[in-house]
Structure formats: structure tokens, C-alpha cells
Length: 223
Image (cartoon, rainbow, N blue to C red):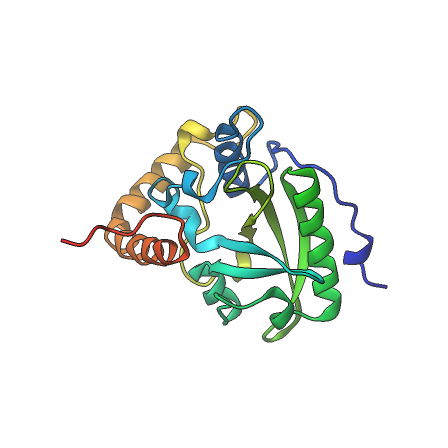
């Protein structure tokens, strides 16, 4: 039996157990709802979400006469490192199995209909393993504020499989009261981040360029 087909899809809100990247993205999304109008991709400034960029997938909703598909506008570089492939520019139906496509459509149509965040577990083929299971958050976006025309995914992979950059860390000012973190661990993390700043700057610049190409941020004006 396809376990994903049996997944119950419900609205999602963060808790003390939620991945920090999900909490961060959700709070951004909620903060940009204006009088019931959904956020648009132009509301997302990658400069404010640098640690998140490598784990984002952005879909364009492709409405056609007979069906609806989803095009990968942005595929985060950390995901590419993890799974060994980049789907930017391709259609969802071109790169997944029929079962995975059916599950993806079911999830995405729910987001489009309800216009609410959604978290589900997904399984994909993975080199050296039968399947890779990960969680992902889906956020509806709209250029006009009403009809969902883009869906942003934030991927949270198993920590044991992260090969390159450190997993996203929620800034201290966004930590919830239920988040269990010790001051010493925070200070140690700050020291590590300070030591890695030069390398991170280069990584962020590459991610910002990818986001600019995907339309998540404006291109730099010509001199």
C-alpha cells in the first residue's frame, strides 16, 4: 500500500518541536498576509533568509487546458548536494514517478484550495538507499493576492544526511519559549558562525544569484 496516498493533509502551525527553518518561514509568511491577501514572491527578500535559501524549492503553478502541472523555478543548492540532481526549469511530471506525482498533486491542490501552510513527509529514491524520507513545509504564494500561482517548499532533511552547510538555525530573537537551548550552546554556535562567516558569505552570494535568476529578488541594476 502506498503510505503517502493515505497521508491525512491538515493545516499546519508551528510548535516547540517544529524544525526552526519551518518556524522561520511560517512567521515570514504570516507577517506578509495583508487583509487576507497572500504573500507574493516579491515579499520574500533572500537577504533576510540567507540560511534558508539552499533548502527552498519554488514551484510555478502551470495551469493548462486539460490539467495542471508544477514547474521548478528554484531548486536549492543544498538539496542538489543532498540528492545529486537539480530540477530547476523542469516540470514536476517529468521528474517523479506516477505515484509521487499523484501525491504531489494532491498536496499542492490542497494548498491551492485552502491557501494555508502544509507539512507532510515525503519519500524519494536516493542513491545507496531505497528511499530518502524528509519533511517539507509548503507555503502558498500569489502575485495577485488571491489565486495561488506559486508554492514555496522548505525542505527539512534528516540531519545525518546533510553533507555540506550546517542546518538552518533560528535567530535568537525568533526562538519560541518552548525551544530548549542552553546559553552555552548558543554562544558556542555564535563562535562557530563567526569563524565560518567568510565561507558563508560566498555561499550566500551564490544562493542570492540563484534566487535572482528565479525571480525571488530583483536583478542588480546595470552600471
